[in-house]
Image: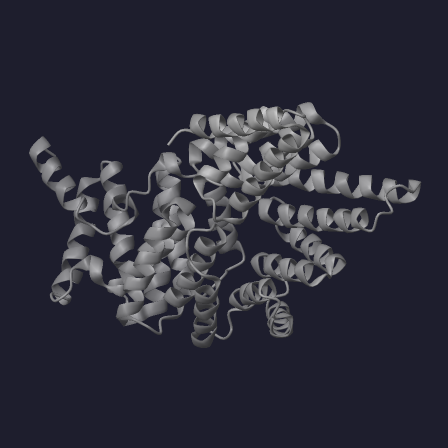
Length: 449
C-alpha cells in the first residue's frame, strides 16, 4: 500500500464509531483491573448475550492496548458471532462498533485488505440507513455509553450523556436503562451532583423494564437502606439473593445492605462465599474489611475495650480488617479509598510509620488521578492532628479539603475541625488565639487558588 493510500484509509478509519476513536486513552486506564472485570463478566455470563457481545468487543480493544493483537482479533470475532446469533436478521446496527474495531485492528496489524473489507461492511450498513449517521443510532450510542462507564470513572459524565441520548431514541431499552441507572449511582456516590432521588427513580424504571435483573434489585436495596427505607429494601434484597445466589456483584450489594441493616455476621458469610468464586476481587475484600471495621467499632462504642477479652477481640477484628484491606489494595491497584482506610487502621494500631508511608503513597496517587482528594486530605489531616500531633500539617490539609468544596460532608468536617482549633487556641489567651487565627488565615492563603 502506498503512503497516499494509507493516509486515505486512516482518514476513513478515523470517522468510524468504535473504541479506537472514542479517545479511551491508555494512560487513563487501569488495564489490569479492567481486564479482570471484563473477564469476570464473561466467566459469570452476567447479562444477556447482547451484553456479552459488548463485553467481548471491549475485551478485544483492551487486549489490543495490552499488546496482544491475536487475542484481540479472537475476542472481536466472538463479538460478531454472538451478535449475529442473538439479533439474527436485525443485527446490522449492532455490528457497527465491532466492525469498526476490526477495521482498526486489521489496519494496525498491517492487514490492509482485511481492514478495507470491514470498512466496506460498514459502508453497506450506512447505505441501508441513509437518514441517520452511524454515530446517532441508539445501538452505537448505548455501546459507547457502556464503554465509557466500564473503562474509567473519568468518563462517567460522557457515559451519562450517551445513555441519555440513547434513551431518547429507545426509551424502553433494557440495556440502556440499566446502564443509565448504574452510572447515575456512581456519579451520585462520588459526589458529582446527581441527587439520590434521581438515582432511585431510574433504578425503579430499569427494574420495571427488566424485572429479572437481580443486580439492579440489590443496588436499589442499598440505596433504600441509605434512605432508611429498610422494609422495601429487605424485600428486594431477598429477591435478588434468591434469583442470583452466586453472582459476585449481587452478593456485594446484598452484603452492603445487610451491613447497613445491622446484620454484619450475615454480610460476612455472604462475602466469604463470594470470595470463593472471585478470590482476587478487590471490591469483595474491601467490603469484608468494612464489615470487620463495623464489628470493631461497635465493640469500641460499647466501652468494653478495657477488659482483656474485649481488647483481644478488638485487636483480632482490626487485624482481619487490615488483612482484607491489604488484599483489596493488592488486587486493585490505585484503590484510593481502601488505601486510605488501610492507613487509618495502621494508625489506630499504633504503626504510625507504616501509616505515614501509606498516606504519602495514597496522596500521590489521588493527586495524580485527581480522585477522592477530599477524603484523603481529611483523613491525613486527622492523622496529623490526633496521631502525629502536628497542628500545622493538620491545618494545611484541612484547608486543602475545605478549598475543594466546603459544602460536602468532608468539607463540612474540615471546617468543623478548623473552628475547633481556633476556639481551643482562643480559649488559652487572647494573644495566642489571635496568633492562631492569623496562622489559619495564613494557611488558607498558602493553599492558593
